[in-house]
Image 1 (cartoon, rainbow, N blue to C red):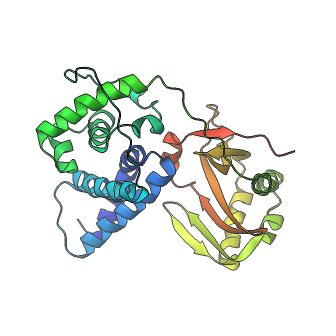
Image 2 (image 1 turned 90 degrees about the vertical axis):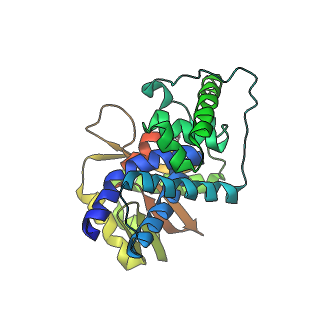
Image 3 (image 1 turned 180 degrees about the vertical axis):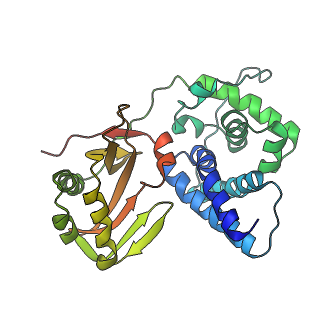
Length: 289
């Protein structure tokens, strides 16, 4: 496999890897951050001559270790006290397990979380899960049984809408940005850009500086399929972007903004990473009065 084929395979496997990272970290957005780190490690190892037979399993092993590093840095560990018999835990149906919130997954110990995601979300065998997690098959099987029971105990909990705790001025800035998009006033948006503004089109490219970022808005000005609303994704105020031709009523992607004073210092657009929206919690928000 040449380098071009290798990178193409990474792109093909990226949504699957993200499903794992998002549930391990408890966030679709942070899961994407961890995934980017994991893919950089994979590219670095490839450049150093690493030969891999099972690319998917190898990538998940890297993603698993990168998730653990992230979780240790965050120093967050929640363990669920269980008193029931742990034998015979059965898998939830795929449609059922995909509705379980990330906050519920985060209440499982790391190995239980890993085993359930790998077996019941991604379809790996217990032996493959053990190899990825770096434990014995017996430990992986036990963790899977315990994790399944814990999920069933916890799945009925109400989902956390995670309304952003942001000063009104911060919400107003994003609301103003959304209104300018709705009106198609991209010249006014360009006027908001800081000199050293940073743009990340997640999973595609990065641009820096006002002159480099300005053309980004031209593409949005030329495309009529998008509709824009103020909202929040995982507790962060965001511009929700809907496809006018999609009747499901769910955003196709979203955009996060960073401000420096009254100027726009950072734009993170998930247009080319729609898999993040598949699992991210989101809400609409009314514009500030």
